[in-house]
Amino acid sequence: MREIKYVEAVNEALMEEMENDTGVFIIGEEVSCAGGAFRATEGLFEKFGPERVRDAPISESGFTGLAVGAAMAGLRPVAEIMYLDFITTAMDQVINQAAKVSFMSGNRIKAPLVIRAPYGIGTREAAQHSQSLEAWFAHTPGLKVVMPSTPYDAKGLLKTSIRDDSPVIFLENRILYFKKGPVPREEYLIPLGQADIKRKGKDITVVALSNMVPKALEAAGMLSEEIEMEVIDPRTLVPLDIETIAGSLKKTGRLLVLHEAPERCGFGAEIVRQVSEQAFDYLDAPPKVLGGLNVPIPFSPVLEDACVPSAEDVADAVKKIIPR
View 1 (cartoon, one colour):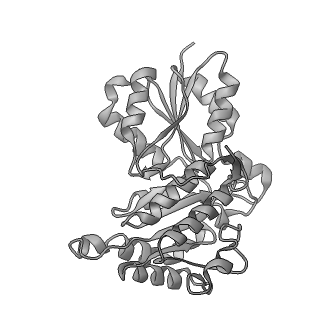
View 2 (cartoon, one colour; view 1 turned 135 degrees about the vertical axis):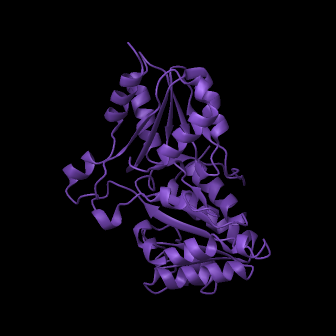
View 3 (cartoon, helix red, strand yellow; view 1 turned 120 degrees about the vertical axis):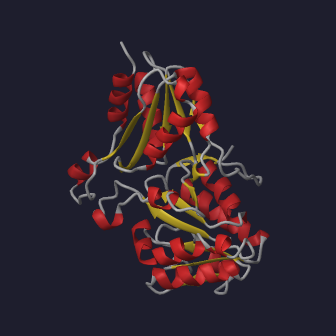
């Protein structure tokens, strides 16, 4: 199977869905001729023209509101937020409008909208360009939240998200953008709410979000001679595939959840809550969350690296959970 970059997989998904449905259009800053800040929309303007690949002014509240209205009118917009951090200026449109219109209209009005947003820690862009805000959106009823970690998952999940009738927050870790992975040439879809077991093991279940997946796999390799880690990528936070996680815990009895967002009130706590309610009898040890420090991300490379878990940190956390 061919291997392509994560960002190329995103681009292919957009291309195919725009070919499949004339109601799909893209709006955002520099998404046309420039191809987006990270080249995810490269070539789409030339193929589909200015009506369907629309540059917006630097006004996230404005073009996100336009996208929400277009979705309510029957189109399927894909809005690109240049950096996830910038969505804070459009939270009314996302939280009070897109997420609620179906409920408030008795399901007569839908908002089939995808908001794509690059995010991530490690690019040395400081506190206002490095936040992981997935828990904000997962906390909001009416939104679906997707966090793919591989090119294969990114393409299949984005296509599914565009076809979904609910608003979807689609978070793309920019550290992963230029990493390659196998992606079929033929069309495929990945259902929302279906986790993927990235590595099988019998000693501990490690649930990793987004860029923590490759770190978890690296840690699993480091410990392979003494500990077998089962690494699960939820892929979507809402809906969450708690059944796959519980099934793994039935075998391993131990849980570690990984994310780069701050530990305090991070999504790891929600996974632990659901496990405690639905799979408590499988646990042989208290579940653990390993996340980022509860500080704004600093610009200093040394300090930034210290704020998020490394593969070594993951390995150390695993060894503390498993008795010797």
